[in-house]
Length: 334
Image (cartoon, rainbow, N blue to C red; front, side, top):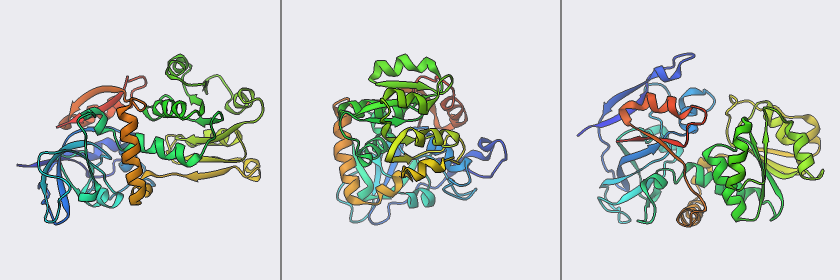
């Protein structure tokens, strides 16, 4: 029995995927208090690509790191003292940043995690939903909860055509919050409107701050969520009212963000928001598990499914995951 793993072996300038290789390593042993999970399905998330592509986001050193932020699997073995799960149960391993760096992520056949970081998946939730249970749904729920947007007010979000963006549209609608959604392609407007988006702005032919002012009658958005960074962050801050909150949770533009000094003088607050910091808080984990699983069962949070590739074909999966209009989340299966 072997443990196949996608290993980040070396840095290759201008071609980071060339530094990845499929290798074989030992299956982890079930140490006391630990659970070994055989991963059967995992998504390809943008955060997985950041983990080895961007130095400021990189989780580990070349030669020792396996990407993969989430997935679903079967309990392979349990260590001494573990009573919460048994062999054969279907579970989601919740990877802490420390264990992700030390043991590697889900782009391998087996992972080892602490028993209190394993969630037993109910029969009502599919493998596809369970494999995506962690990153997008927990971040959507956490960000929207922390923004504290009153009912009937507007929240602005960038990268609204993403899986995350679509989930946020539906959750905001469920909570009575109106959404202004920023996308790159105007072709996405009708699709997001049909999903429940209140307003959609295309950066290809519209000025974001000007449109937000028009939409809100000059009040501007109550708060905002930015996954892009770069020059777009400046427009996002300009679209938020005095004293409003902006959370930046991604760096699709490359890891830098531009801000206007005038918006800082208006006391618009720009803060980074990182899921892994929230995972370290036991009570926050319990809230996420309880509330997000219910939202999934009630079809408030749903998932778009794209193509599935075998783990050995990870290069094809990465390429597909970055295609414009790919049609849903890309998966790697064992």
